[in-house]
View 1 (cartoon, rainbow, N blue to C red):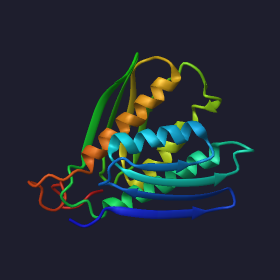
View 2: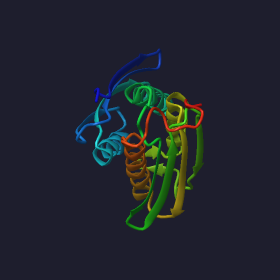
View 3: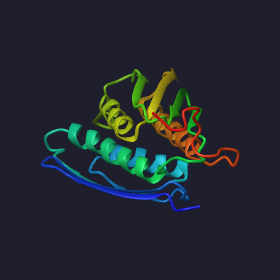
View 4: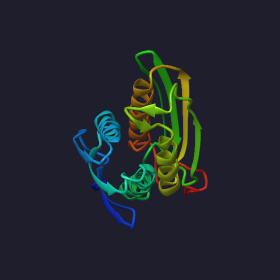
Length: 197
């Protein structure tokens, strides 16, 4: 089995981002985005998905976190797509219903090559740790578009914002781990068309 590792960098006038991911890692991470709450979320993502993840990001967060969040989604989406390669032999689908204390979330995804985000999340407040929680939509939207992922994120039980987004990132990690895992019964890609998208 070949290594499923990708290293992507992207530099614009607004951000400078580097992402390295190993889909077959052990959950080790080194994350520095300039947004402490996002560092926490991406560290959880690596740990619970068993992805080795290195991310550094510098952005114009003195203006707003929007550009950094959007571009993090772009670069991480590119990295996941590159690491997954032709996706031969993988399960393609993954889902998780995950409790995080009083909150409950559902994440389901398909690495179909057809991007789409279906985001049914209503935070109890706009801010979480002084961070605009609405920007998570922008992050996942960019990630789906670049990765070719169909992603449903649904809040099933409301609760404190930190718990809500911690649950989302853990569930996303578990669903992606399942979707990228191999099944020896699969020959080529899991599609009657013989290809994704």
